[in-house]
Length: 301
Image 1 (tube, rainbow, N blue to C red):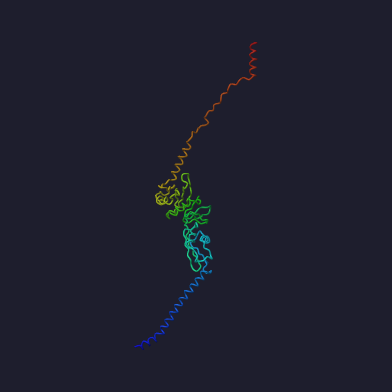
Image 2: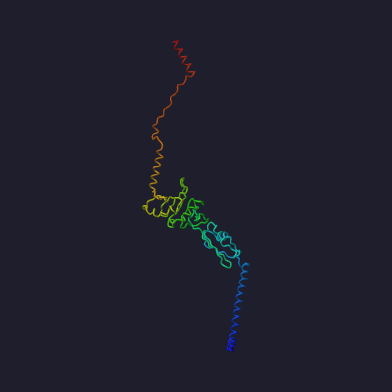
């Protein structure tokens, strides 16, 4: 019995030794791999291999890649592992044309910046050129052919333009595309009054305040007009239509009132002019002498 066990051990011993060597070799390779990985990582982090070498910018139309790179603060030569992505993203968002941004590393040495610019709300007419007006209210210094957005006339960068751009951004797409031109047409009691020329030929009068809400019912209002009837649609709290014929009648009445305001002599030639009466003048000394001589001659007769 014991002899059989000795024989079995003699047969199994070489196999056990081989398994032990195989496990030792695997353990050694594992430790070596970890060591080499640590050494390689240390060398990579400390060498120029970890420097930012390439910066890719995607999604920019009005802003150049150089402008976005400068806004981000990321420069070639900076360490990939040392980038504060959140801080650099916030820096990009401070640019006036950028609404959204995301930065990601692509190892070993590439940085990708994806941006989303503010949408184009309108185009500002500047002579024969047109500059995009973003939904943020900023005018981009670029000459672009007007697309599916209204053309603005008489506006400057400021609070009113910012409000109008935001209102246009809130409008229904169908209503926005129906507008051809928006003219700043202020009056004393409404400095934000607007005159709109629509693509369907209608003229609309409204104001900047709550512009999107005021224009929302426009398709329904325009659809109720008689075909060929021309006039102005007042898109106020209660929209109403005023035909050009009514406007002409009002102007005629106003002109008549102005012309009848004073009394006009229709026949000025019939008026007689009284000549002033001559005042009696005292006799001159010569006439007195002549009269005295005549009296003496009569007495002698």
